[in-house]
Amino acid sequence: MKFIIYGILPMTLLCFGAKAFSQTEQQQNAIEDSLYIAEVQDQKEPLKILHAEPLYIDLIRDLGARKGEREWNVGLGITDHNDHDEYTALVEYEWAPADRLGLEVELPFSLYYPTTHGAEAPGSRLNSLKLAAQYTFLVSERCKTSMALGYIQEFELNDFDRYGDSKLFTGNVYNPFLVAAKRWGSHFHSLLYTGPQFIQHFGHHALETVWQINSNFHYMIPGTRNFIGVEFNKELHKSDFDMTIRPQMRVGVTEKMMIGIVTGIPISRENERFSTFLRLIYEPGH
Image (tube, rainbow, N blue to C red; front, side, top):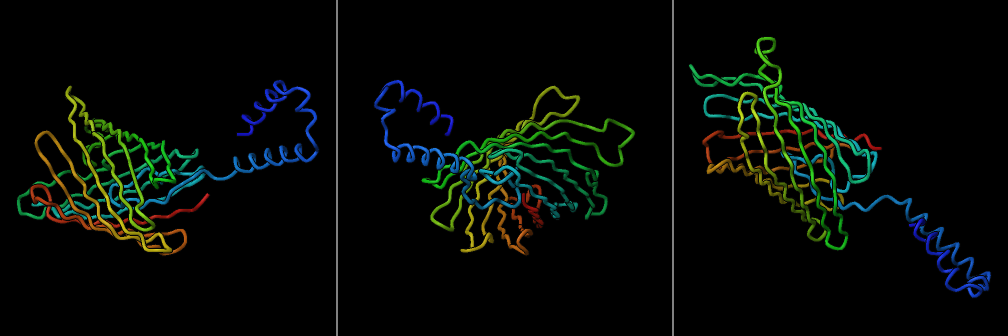
């Protein structure tokens, strides 16, 4: 802003000539004051609207992230499948190297145990190395709305028991996505997270496409960052549609630590019957 003001002043002097130089001392002081105010405004933190962030399919960083923000997440979960249990864990670190830009590194694990005699469970593994970026391109104070574009790159890994016998990396997942969030009044929040996943398995020429459409609704407790809400995680693969309803709550433990609790209820028991997920969130600050 100050560069614009400094560019306008010389043009003004050229247009008005001697009249501009005849300004009173009071007028000159007023101009200097306006320049100072502009500089102070430039030093203020950029606008950021508080939105409730879903706990299961979470964001790369807060919408409208400010430079220097960072966060650690540790997640633990269990999913009851028809013939085996899946124990999941994740560790992720996210940070904002610049205003409105969030980056993330995540390591998600899956451990499988058969629950039916004679059943074969998938191999336990570190699922992938996930690298992600998200940029908030719209922050509207008037509409209480934020929008962002992002991209997740996953390098899929082999089962633990196949290390050394075959390739370490088995494929890639390319996942561009869009986020749109709106706060309704002071306490109600809605958020849409959607985009395609393009799955490439090494040795196969075709890309497998899965569409994700995740809609979220939350109520934030006044005066806190605690909330209760629900995620609707939907996947569309060819003609197959799956949806899991995930009631959830987030509670602040300390000023820098929060805990999120999620329950997963699938609308069809085709792939799973029930799941739970726990997320520990630590924000060390700038």
